[in-house]
Image 1 (cartoon, one colour):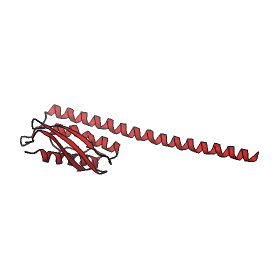
Image 2 (cartoon, helix red, strand yellow; image 1 turned 135 degrees about the vertical axis):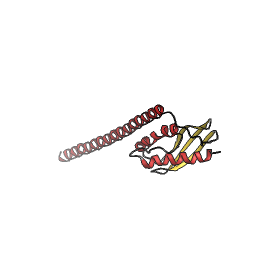
Image 3 (cartoon, rainbow, N blue to C red; image 1 turned 90 degrees about the vertical axis):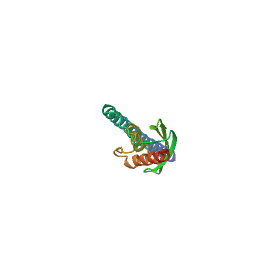
Image 4 (cartoon, one colour; image 1 turned 30 degrees about the vertical axis):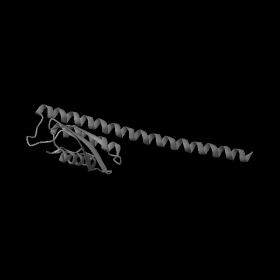
Length: 154
């Protein structure tokens, strides 16, 4: 009878530990989700504000910019490793920047860094501010875009 109680208590203790561990994992997952969503929201806000500023001031165009139309790939060094982008040139202007891969970048920080892409397109240049808190990831995107633009120069 005593061994039955000991086994029962051991089983209850193990179940309690597993439930506690599971709740800790769920809390961490929620924190990560909140951080990622906050970063995305902040990125969207910054991009919207900067696009409104550029729209109000008029889109600056570089008269010395002479790019050949097409899609060009570039690689830059981010915080976690290589960042690969595709840059689309249409009508001699930078029209799109798409991140192809950034496998080793932290998702929350990289989401913040991607907020500089609308600025790059609006300014037609990589001479834009990096995302605060995601400087290395932003630099990786900027380096990759510069690399692609070098290939697009006539």
